[in-house]
Length: 334
Picture: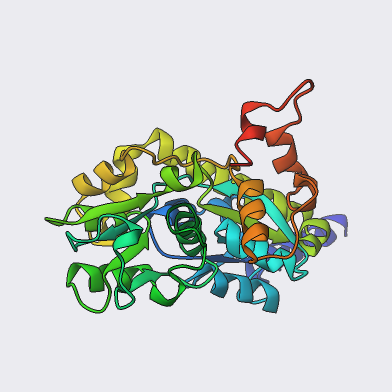
C-alpha cells in the first residue's frame, strides 16, 4: 500500500512539473525618456546590454525631440524617469514639478556653428539670420541667452532669431545651407558640422559658462524615489554601469554606436575621444544655471541648496567640505 501511495505521489509531482506551466510574476516596468545624440550613448548601451533586465526590471524606452517634451512626458506619467538639460529641469521645478536630480548625465562640448564667414560673433547677426535650438528653455537656448548678455548686453537680444528644430533636422538644414544660418548643438551633430569645409564656431560652452557642466541630468519624481526605491536604485546603477563600460571600451563602443548615427566606426571613435567628451554621472553646474535663469527671468526662484533639487545619492557624490567648498561644490556654480 505504501509503495502504491508513493508511486501515485511521484506521478502527481511529475505531472505538476512537466504538464503545468510555472507561474511567473510580470517584471516591474520602468519607462525611460531620452532624446537624440551621442549624449545618449549610455542609454543605447544599457538597452543593448540588458542592464535593467539584469537587475530585474523591464525598461520601456521612449525618445523625444527636446527637454520640454521629456518634461511633459514626466509630468503626464508617460515616463517614470528621464533625461533633459538643467534649464528645462529647473523650469519644471520652478513651476512645482515634484522631481529632483538622480544623477548627472555626461559632459560634452556644446557650440554655436555657422557656415557664414561674415558671422564671426553674435554682434554680426541680422534679424533674418535664424539660429536653431531644440526648444525654448533648452540648454542651448539658455547658453545663447548667457552669451547674448555677455556680448550684447541683454539675454533676450537674439530671441527673434531663434527657431525650434530637433538636432537631426537642424544639422541637415545647416549643412545644406537652407533655412537657418546657425545651429547651437551637441555631438555628433556639432562634430559633423565642424567637419564641413568653411563651418566654424561662433561661441562654445566653456567661453559662455566658464567651466564644464552636465549637459543633461537624470530625473525622477519624489514619488518614484520614495515608493519604488529598488527601481530608483536600479536606474542609477544601470546608467552608471553603462557609462563605465563606455569609458573602458571606447573602440567597442564606437563599433556598436556607429550604425545608430550612420557613421563609420573610425569617425565615431574620434567623436568619443573628442576633447571635452566625458561620460560621467558627476553633476556640474546646477546652481550656476539656476542663478542665471533667475536673474534673466526664466525662473522665479533659486534653490536655497542642492538638497532642494537633488536626491541623497547626488548630495553624497558632491559632498560638503568643511572649511570651504570642495572642487566639485565650486563647479555647481559659475
